[in-house]
Image (cartoon, rainbow, N blue to C red):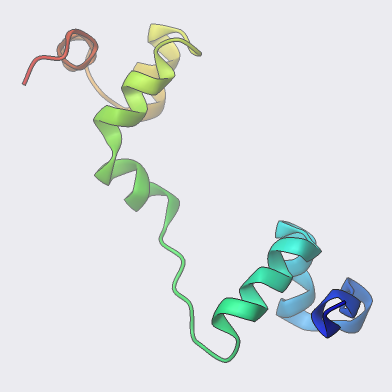
Amino acid sequence: MNVIDLIEIKHLKGEQKELAETIGIEAYRKLLLNYSGDRLFISRFDTIVSYNKEELIRAAIDKFSEAEIISFFRISKREFERIRLGCK
């Protein structure tokens, strides 16, 4: 047994409690083990999407309609077709 396994959400306060409730206590414990005391930066959602837009669009093709993809990523039909066909 590791002492960290004893830590539960009820032992936390404020942002730490909110974080553990959001990601789950197991993931929170992993953060404690790997990053305890460090400052962490979590990228903005839209930054990650913009840096990986074409890959995300290709992954979305089998799961969402063309209209949903075009609307979500705010791209033109022409750009969607270019990405779908794998053109540069």
